[in-house]
Length: 580
Image 1 (cartoon, helix red, strand yellow):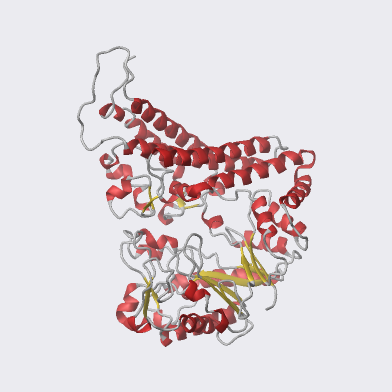
Image 2 (cartoon, rainbow, N blue to C red; image 1 turned 45 degrees about the horizontal axis):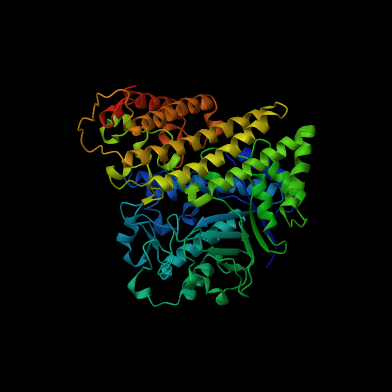
C-alpha cells in the first residue's frame, strides 16, 4: 500500500484553506482532507422538533456531493451542487500545492423516509439513537444491489471530477449504520432476509462498490468508535479485503496500516483555535513511523505553531515527552525569543488543563454548555414557569429533551444522566476547577509575552474558554441543589422567630451559584462583544443550530442574566431565609 500522509485542519474559508495548504508544502504530507462541507440545515428543516440530525448535518456523505438520478426527487439539488462546488474548489487548491484530496465521511448514511416508503427494498438498518431521536432513521441497505449500484456510480463520478483517491468512512454513528451490525445503537437490525448473510460479504461488497474497480483509490471503513463496544463481526472480515481496502485499520494481510488522529471535536468546539501543540506531538509520539496511512489532525491557533511543529518532527523519532518538550522549546524560541520558557509553560498548562477535563467523562459534560445551551439559558428553580419569550432563543437548540421535563433538567445530557447527586457533582466540579486552574495559569503566562495581535487574541479565546468551564461548574452545582429542593408545591417555608437563624444553607447556596452565573454571563458577553465571529463557532441567527451558536450570543447572555436577576429572590419561596 502506497504511503499516505493525510492532514486535516479546520479552515473557515477557501482563502484560509489555501494559506494552510501553502504552509504544508514540503512537510511530508501527501494529502489533505477536503470534505468539511457547509452544514446541511435542510436535514433539520424536515422536522424541527427532532434535533437528532444535528449530529449528521456537518458530515460529507457521498450523496451530498453526487446525487444518483434515483434520489434526485428526495434530496435538495441546490445544496448538493453547492457542496460539490465547495469540494471541487478545495481539491483545486490542494492540487495547486502538490497535495491530493481525501474525504472523510460516515456511510451508509440515512436517507429521507419517503425514499424507503417508495422503495421498501432499499431500507437498511435503523441507525439513529433511540434516546436522542423522536422517530427512526434508516440507512440504505448494503444487501441491496440497487443501493450498491447508486454508491458505485456516485463515487466513480466523484473520483473522476475531483481526483479524490482516499475515502475514509466511519459508521454506526452520526446517522450512518450497517445492516445487522452489533454496533448499531438500537442493536443488530435490518431486513429479515439479510439477517443470516455473512458480514464479510456485506462490508466488502460495499467497499468494492465505492472503490468502483479502481484499485488506485483507497477506501477505509471504521466501526470502532470511542466508548462503544468493538464490532467484532465487521472487524473479522479483513481476510476478504482487496487491494487498497482497509477495515478497522487492517489490510488484507491483517496488518494495522492506518493511524487516525482525526478529531471531530476540533470543528465542533464552541471556542475556535484553542492551542493544542502538545496534543499534536503526543499523537506523533504514539504513531509508528512506518505506518502506511496516517490521518493527522493539525490543531490551529493564532500563533499557528502546529505546522511548524510537524515540520520539525517529520522524520524524527519521538520517544518520550522529553522529545516533545524539546520541540516545543525550539518552536517557542522562534515565536517568543527570550520569553520562550513562558510560552512553553503556557502550552504545558493548556495540555494539563485538557487532561483534567477528560477525567471521568467530564469532557462529555462540558458539551452541555453548547448542546444543552447552558451557555445562554437562565438557571432558575422553576424553569417550567418561564414564558415562551424567555425560552425562545435557547429551547429550540437543546439536543435531546423528548419531553419538557427532560428539557428542564440541566443534567439530562443526550438522554442519559452523566452526573447525579452530591458526590458525582463534587467530583465533576473539582475536575473542572483543576482544569480551570491550569487554564488560568496558561493565561498568566501568555500575558508575560510581548504584546501582539496574536497573543491578545489567544488570551481572549482562553478567557472565553474559562467562562464556559465556569458555566459548566455552575450548571452542575445548580442542578444538584435543585434536585434536593421540592419545587412541586409552595408550602411556605418556616419563619423562625429565633434570632439569629441560619437554618437552611440552601438559601445561601442558591444565591452564591446564581450570582456567580449572572456575573459569568455578563463577563462572557463583554469578552465576545465585537469578537464573536473571531472567537466562537457561530453563524447568523437564521442558520443557528444545536452545534453552532448565533452571532446574537452576547445579547442573549445579557438577557439570561436579567431573567436570573428577576428570579433572584425565588429561594424565599422554598427555603427558610436567614434572620441575622
